[in-house]
Image (cartoon, rainbow over all chains, first blue to last red; front, side, top):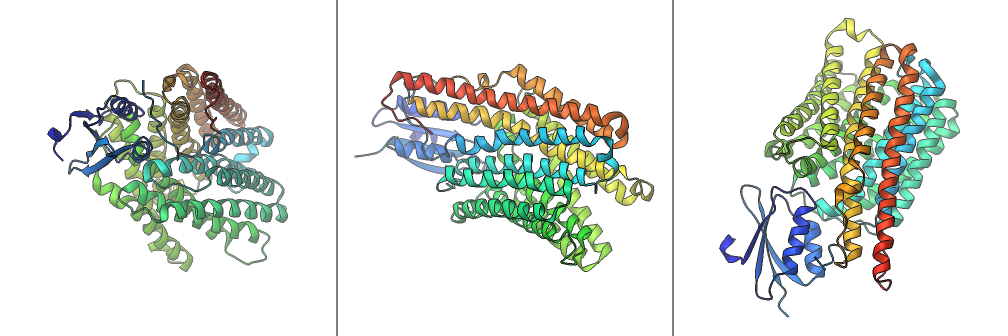
Length: 78
Length: 436
């Protein structure tokens, strides 16, 4: 997944919880219907997946060789 | 302001919290036992009161915190959801609490009935937990060292509790078992197979996450839990078969492996991006230093005959491991986990109508620091009491009482903070269902 596929990139790798979750949710609040948000995290965010599912987003996760987990999020197509 | 629902599958707050709040009560009971028994408690590790104190800490404090934490972290770090978490938590918590009290009563009275009932209560509570957690973890593949460690720790817990139950029902001599040998295998599995493996599994996530350190090396995460469990299994076989020399080498290798974990954690901590250590980091550092010292002392006692003959060293090792190592790491984690849970449950309840208060306000930093100093003082006094029991037993008992009463106060403070803000949220729009 390349970062230029996303409209907004949120690098939450160096942040202490709950900051990554707070920032991601804030970014999703503002995410336009056709926009994509890419979140960079140090580990797989299981609670985030559930939040995305509940709030009508779809996502793709990729694992990079340096341990970074990339989650590309968009609104679910109806 | 975010209006999104952040989660709905995490266990209700009441599920893990009951374990966390009960834990300091057992440490307070331990402190009262110390004050009641006096210096005689430290006569040997085999006195009834020393064994009662040990189990008030291991079953009453540690097991409570560990099961409560596991209930909470399984969905978060492994995506494994325990079904009906509140029911499971209620039953397991009750069984373990009653079992810990009965076990301590058993050691103080040597009544076979107390031991049997304790075995029944702890055995059924732990069995229920293992079935529930095992079921949740069954379909989750071990994609990272934490998930692998959590699964292996459950095996360690099963072996520890099975051996403990066997010991409890055979203490009257009816089963003709080699009790001393079984006790050391029970202790080995309890300390290493269950507690260290679980602490390490959690450390792989929480040390980098909350202490802003680099990750543990990949090779370490991959092999650590397996190595500990393999060495323990081989040692148990060698020890039971009476192969003295291989048994010593195997248990020595297990102790060294644990020492590597402690040293590595200290090294990672020294590379933390945070300018000033918070209480959790201080607690972790103390725990790792005590673990290293306990490992070094154990290895020294095994290699220097003059030291091995002294009766104090097993007690010293025990105090270092239990109060210095495990209790410290767990209290340190409680100061992250409890505020985090308060914050996330409030955030979830508010659903964007208001922001949950800052996590750092849940328990005042000053109260956390004072409690930490009381714990440090209790540890130093307990260590001194193993060598000079007449002088230090009572001050140690008082300090342990103070440190845990303070911990209880801090945790109850977090609970009342949660309740206060939950009412504020409920007042905003009473139509929204209240969380349990």
